Amino acid sequence: MLVFNFICSECGLRFDIDPQRYVCPLCSVKQANDQPLSGVLEVELQGAPEGNAADLAELLPVAARYFPPIPVGNTPLWEPAALRAELGFDALYIKDDGANPTSSFKDRASFLVSAYAKQNGIDTIVVASTGNAGSSMAGIGAAAGQKVILFLPKTAPPAKLIQALQYGATVHRVDGNYDRAYELSLAYSQAAGGMNRNTAYNPMTIEGKKTVSLELFRQLEKAPDVMFVGTGDGCIVAGVYKGFRDLRQLGFIDKIPQIFSVQSETSDALYRAFNSGSFENLPTRTVADSICVDVPRNGIHALIQLREYGGKVITVSDEMIIASQARLSRSTGLFTEPASAAAFAGFLTVRTTLPRDAAVVILATGNGLKDSATAARGITVPERLIRSLDDIV
Image: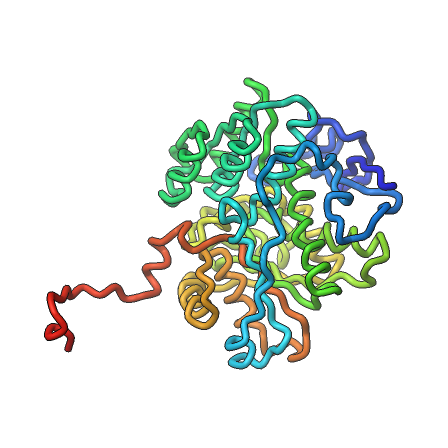
């Protein structure tokens, strides 16, 4: 039987799981302005599962009966034949998390946060988002009958705003960027109550995201050799590591995959810190809104794991992201959003350094219709209208 507790990712102090505890009380006092969160908590598991790794619910700290009735997870693992042949990687895979109910990987975190809130009798969830986490929490909350309060930066793509409103969320549009929305959401939840779902701040966000690694193990019947993950806050990277770490702890695998964390050249705070050892708060911009952050909230925690397990942080240009989005669509039939295309662009950038027989997974985190305006930059829309076949030149 497994038992669960919180553990600080920095000092190792342990705590009982408590919905009022978000970060380590000792390490969080070191929190500096314009820096990533200090004292990020993880869910630590101890003991052994009664079943096996195929029973994902058993490896989560909330009982299955609290999860809302919406089919999160179990997303397809594509085997892109044409792309494999073109690039010479016979074990190239794409994990399509755009197939989740709200068309986003973020459903994994929202699903667990929703269950955690229900288990503790909390019916209001507060979240800041560039778009996907907010629309995800709104959709999952709708299925669970929970109220969702969303703080969304003014630059969020209209499709993500509309999606959240369709699900019934209360949306506050912030005259500022994601970092400002994050600060306002924390202040709101501290004043008005409810559960805060913010990335990294709520330990269940990382824990929910680990399920992608558990699924990959089940689908491949092993861990992949290499993964590429588009990165903003660093929470998805941490979740991917957490899943594989749990699998290794339980004896299902014996090594952690090499993970490439891919950022845009113009939103590269984690990349700069990976190379310099410190975080510098600089204004960012990128076509990949899902990974556009000035301060990666889970930056410290993500860097600890990337360094410990031989991961790398690389950057790609916005032009490469747009071109890679179109290339992926045309070669596989998978239309994915720019943050996912960044992961594919990262693979294209370093593929000559990888063994051709490596099992490589590209993590596709969202559907391309989430941001059709950016996708339009990689295609040519016909301007000329025809009235008959005689008009076709």
